[in-house]
Length: 92
Image 1 (tube, rainbow, N blue to C red):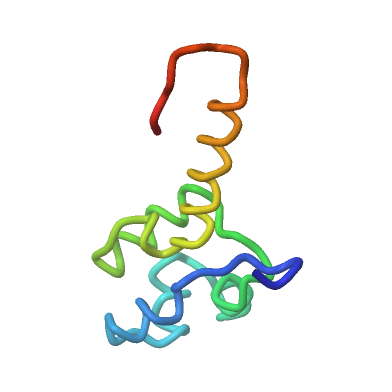
Image 2: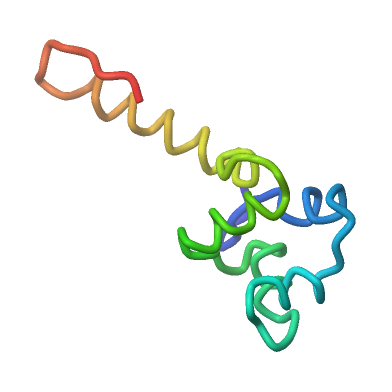
């Protein structure tokens, strides 16, 4: 993963859905495409509310849009939980 970037599949799912950045921006209430572009390039992450809206717009689940972050987060959670002093295991 490139440092300072948030890997995602926003552009892929937008194209699969047949939308332009302009259509997505308007659907989400933005005046221009700059926010959509920054999200797709991984410069910033959309807030949770927008991640849900994008997943609905693209007919997919939020973790599919951010699969590398999802997998990294899940792996870090398991390592953290398994290395704690508690004996029980928790699976997220």
